[in-house]
Length: 251
Image (cartoon, rainbow, N blue to C red; front, side, top):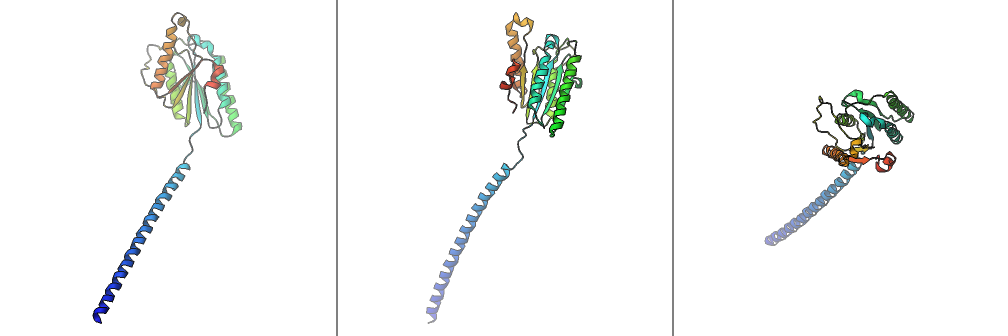
């Protein structure tokens, strides 16, 4: 009788052990499924947070650089046309500046006007009127072209301005024949930081000497394109201002 009871007790304990092992296995499976579910939820939540991050900066900044040297000084009316186009297309939060190229262009005095447009439409409209008035006053005062043309200094001035403005899209409009004639005392052997700047050469007028050597005109274009792209900029040329709106997309 005692032996029989012991056998029964042994069998019962074995069955209990099996039941306990099965329960542990079920718990491990449930835990594994829960961990997978948590990982999946974490991935979904992370994607949601990424989608709710800071919106991309869509503001725009433009700098107009106009050459007032030599024969190109006769093209100054193009600066007014270009500024009118930009003032009509830039909005609140966008920025605009205009400067000139002369004997030595890397100075604050070469900035004619600058503005970052207010979020209030009435203030923005007033800023645009004042900007245009400053440019008009400069054009009316202008009388004597500069003897030299420091284009590099002007580009450096423009890039300094654009780098200080918190804008997602940056443009440099270059009104010049692209013939750089530096005075002997200037050193412009410097690199230009034009990362993510779209440089648009506008109304690149041919010089009188280009009639004798047309290749010189093409060499100027190629040299400046290489310099701009070496500095990280994007080069574009639009000779006809009437085509500007179709050729340049202000994103």
